[in-house]
Image: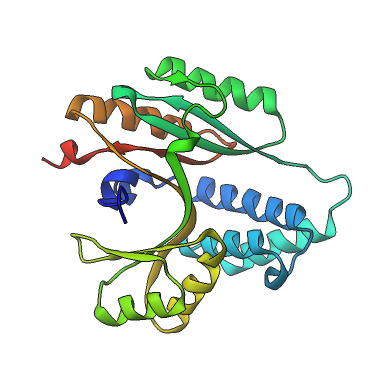
Length: 244
C-alpha cells in the first residue's frame, strides 16, 4: 500500500496518544450518540456509522455497559437532546506537515476558536477548508496484537484491502470504510486479539521531520487531541527521527 507504510510513525506510538481514561470514554460516548442520530437507528445492523463507532469503542476497551447505555439514551432522548455537528478543520504543523482534525461539536464558534488558539500557541497555522484534506484517504484501520500467517489469511478472507507487518510483531489491517466493522468482528470472532479498530485519515505520502520538529509537532497534536470537541487528529508526519 504505497504511502501507508510505517504505521507507528504516521500515527505515533499508542502510548504517546493515550488520553485519560474518562476523556477517552467521553469521546466515544459522543461518537456513539452522534452515530445513532445521524444514522437514524440504534441498531448497528442497519446503521454503518454506529457499527464503526461500536468497533472503535470496543477496541479502546470502553465497557459494554457504557456503549449500550449511550445507544439507549440516544434512541430515547432524540427530542431536545444535544445535537452535534461533524466538522473537520485543517492546518499545517512544523516542517510543512498537513494536519486534519475531526470534531463533534454543539458550538461551532467555540470549537473553531479553541482549534485556532492551539495552532497559534503551538507553532502551527490553521488552513482553509480543503487545504490539506485532499492529502488523506479515509480507511478502516485494525490493529492485531500478533502477526501470524493465520491472522493475515483471515483478514483477507474477511474482506481486508491490505495488510502490513509491523516491526513490533503486530499486524495492521486496512479496509474500505464500509468494511471496518465486518473485518474487525470477523477477526475477533475467529480468536485474534484486535487492539484497535477505527476509521482513520491515512496520508497518501509522509513528510520526514527532524527530531526537533517532530517533538514540537507532537506537542501541537496532543494539545489538539486534548480539546473536548476533537475526535481525531491525523498528520502526514514521519516521526522516525524520534526513534533514532
